[in-house]
Amino acid sequence: MPDFAPDSKLKFTFGLWTVGNIGRDPFGGPVREAISPVQICDLLGEVGAYGVNFHDNDLIPIDATAQEAERIKKDFKKALKDNGLVVPMATTNLFSDPVFKDGAFTSNNARVRAYAIQKTMRAMDLGAEMGAKIYVFWGGREGVESDATKDPVESIKRFREAINFLCKYSISQRYGYRFAFEAKPNEPRGHIYFAVTGSYLAFIPTLDHPEMCGVNPEVAHEHMAGLNFVHQVAAALEAGKLFHIDLNDQEFGRYDQDFRFGQANLKHAFFLVKLLEDYKYNGPRHFDAHALRTANYDDVKAFARGCMRTYMILREKAAQWNDDKEIQSLLKTINQDDPIGRVTKKFSSANAKKLLGAPLDRVKLAEEPLPYERLDQLTMEVLMGVR
Image (spheres, helix red, strand yellow):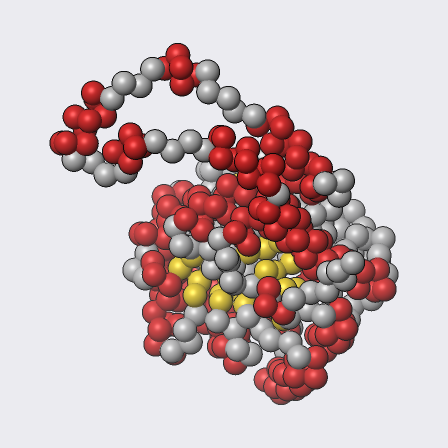
C-alpha cells in the first residue's frame, strides 16, 4: 500500500498566511495563537512541504524598523535552511492597511497609487533576496461597491501602467521574475476588477512585456463565480500562461472558504490533478488554504498533510484512469478520427472545396454512440476505490 508521502518534484508549497492563519473571521476573533515565520517553517519542515511563500508583511510587519527587518530576515533564512525549504513565490499585501481602502494600483488618489508601486518594488526586493522567481498579484481591493466611484476603463489603464512599471523594474534589477495574476470575482470588494482568470488572459497581451506575465488561478475564486476551475486552468495551460496555481476547495457560490484541497468537490479535484499531470505542469503547487477555525496546531499539521496527501492519492487515481483498458476503449469509441477532420486544421481554397463537397450525413452523425454515462460511472468507481 503506497504511503502517499509528498513528492518534492511536485513542489508543494504553503504560505506563511495559510498554516499561520489564526482562525479569525468576520464574526469572531482569533482561536489560535499567532506563530512566527520561523515556527511556520518548522511546521512545514515537519510535514514534508517543499517550500513556503509570503506577502511582504507576513514576514516583516509594515511598521518594522530597519533593524527589526534585518533580524527577521536573518532568522527566516536560517529557518529555511534548517527545514530544507525554498521560497518559489512572493507577493505584496496591497489590501490590509487602511491606505488601500479604495484600492492600490486603481486608487483614485495618485499618491496612493505611487505608494502601492513603491511598496511592491520593496517587496519584490525582499522576495528576490529570499530566492523567489514568481511574483503574484492579487488585487483584493482593486474594485468598487458602486460604479459611481470609479471609472472602470480608467482603472484598467491604471492597473496596466503599474504592471508595466513593475515589469521594467524587475528587468532593471535582473530579478528574472515571472508575474502571475490572480483573479477573484468579489470579497473583500463588492466587485473586483479582473474577476476571472479569462479576464487576465485577455489583459496580458496589452502589456509592454506579456512574455513575462501569466496567471495564478485559484480553485476557490473560480468556484465562487460558479465556474468550472478545470476549464480555467486548461485555458491558461493552452495559452502557455499557467505560471503558478493555488489549490484549495470551495462550495460553489459561497464566500471564500479556502478549504483543504479536495475537501468539498473531490471529482473536480480529481480532474484538476489529472489535467496538471497529463500536461506535465512543472510549477509550484501552492496550497492557498486554511485549516478549519476549530483546529489547534496539531490539527493544522493534519490539514497541511491532508492537502498534499489528497493530491498524491488523486495523482495515482489519474494514472489508474489513464491505464484502465475499459475507459480507454470507451475513449476510442468517443473520439473518432476521420480524414475529413484533417481538412479543417488549416484553411486553403482546396481544403474549403473538399469540405464543401464532403458527404457528411447529419442524421447518421447524430446516431453515433456517445457512452458518456458509462464513462462517468467508471470514473466514479475509480475514485471510490472499487475498480
